[in-house]
Length: 190
Image 1 (tube, helix red, strand yellow):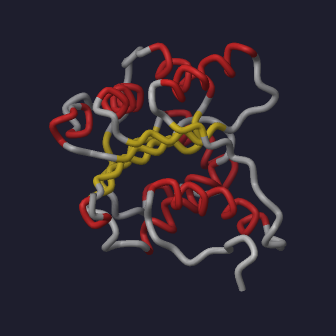
Image 2: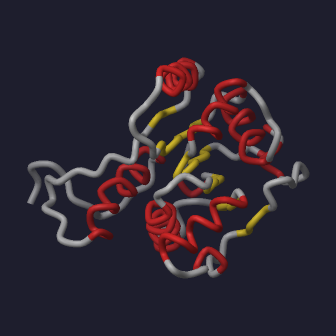
Image 3: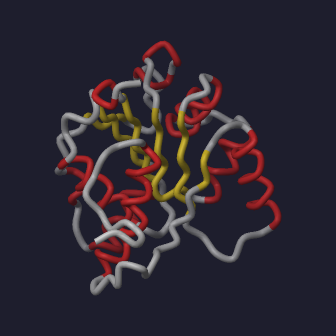
């Protein structure tokens, strides 16, 4: 599929790691032209964690269309809307469990269910440690269903000097997995 026809859902849950969702949304704002549409949905806890961790309410300032977590009339609640990528960043273990179990009790879990059933790209940016066997089995279930588990595990190859640069090593991997083009550190390239 041509990159400019991507229709993307970004979901933000209440797991710790609001810096990842902020940097991802910032980067996507800069990559206009590589996607047709971005839809945004926050859990209630996501907004509270963002305020706590980042000391701001900048989640209100993005130009993307925002949908309520209970808006089952959102276009991406149905496969016919042809949204082809969904990223849950950060993804709580509870959200991941609901997705793995096929429980569509809010827009985030419903949209993920749609993405999986339509064989489209679902990326869950998990942010928890340690993991229980339940978490690992849920990750296995989602992977077997075609989803991608992308743990928020920063890399140090690029020698990041700030928290933002360190977190960007994760968000740049998300952008790569989405299939979008960006300028970023590449292993063994100058």
